[in-house]
Amino acid sequence: MHSAFVVQWFLDIPELSATISHDELGQKVVKEPELPWRLQHQRAVDRFRWLVTRKYNTGTLERLLNSEHFRVRQSSAFALGLVGPQTCTPALWRMLGDSSREVRQTVQESLWNLWFRGSTEAHNQELRRIIRMRDKNKALFSINALLRKAPKFAEAFNQRAILNLRLQRPLESIADCQKALELNPYHFGAQAGLGQCYLQIGRDCAALNALLEAQRLNPNLDGISETIEHLERTVGGRGASGDSMQGV
Image (spheres, rainbow, N blue to C red):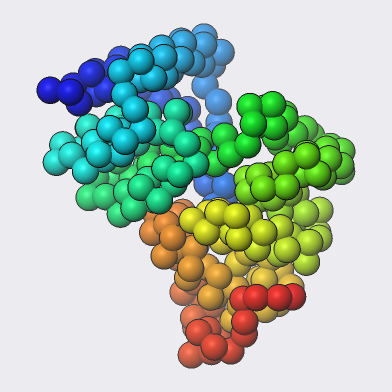
């Protein structure tokens, strides 16, 4: 079976033992495992990437997403997150409703991987360097410079939105979330972030609409169902029309 290769290579990767969660903005938070494990895991991922690029093309991997076997779907989704182009986003996004929890988790991580590869390799590496910076103001300066070079890099706008919100600049963050969504309408993280921005400035109806849309984009998001339920009680029936999501 043609799909057997990608499954076997995927199963050869050591099982992820890092603790992964998502914060209130829908962004991935990783508690890293010990260095020896990380190196072993990375070597296995690099080997998987190399093997996949030799054996499969994007069209084949997308077709395998429709397999009746969950492991084939999971392996193919993982592969697309590593080597697929941005045009794979719709195919992966549809898999967020897969019947298998394991597939849904892999798809979510693969979408993040895909979006972080949304520009040139140099720009992608620069963004990863910026988000590791401890000084938020310096990080903001650096990401502004990056966006001048890469004005269509949706994930860079999303990451600047996160920085702006943490720097208590919600209006700037709203603009960045909206720009990220303009460039990538499937970006559930930017959509959830938009809801958090509206909450911060007291626009509960707009926040509810934004979070409902984030939940539609990704039903697996952690931590927003409670906020939605609270807002539904607070704003009553005004959520759908009482406040616009657009504009400030």
